[in-house]
Length: 61
Ligand SMILES: [Zn+2]
Image (cartoon, rainbow, N blue to C red; front, side):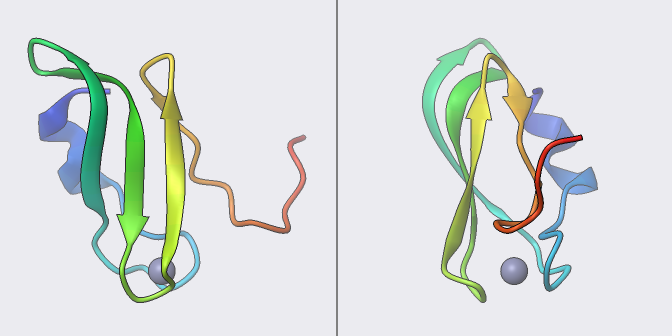
């Protein structure tokens, strides 16, 4: 995901803004890292440049 696309993402549970905690970046692209919701104290993984914003208990369809 692009760093700039942070603005379109919010927490799927509480709709708060997420904090970006990049672990691996290439230019303005975040390859791996965490989108963290401070309100829920829950981090959503970014893997292979794709943020996984599914709430904890929801299964992948
Ligand atoms: Zn939240």
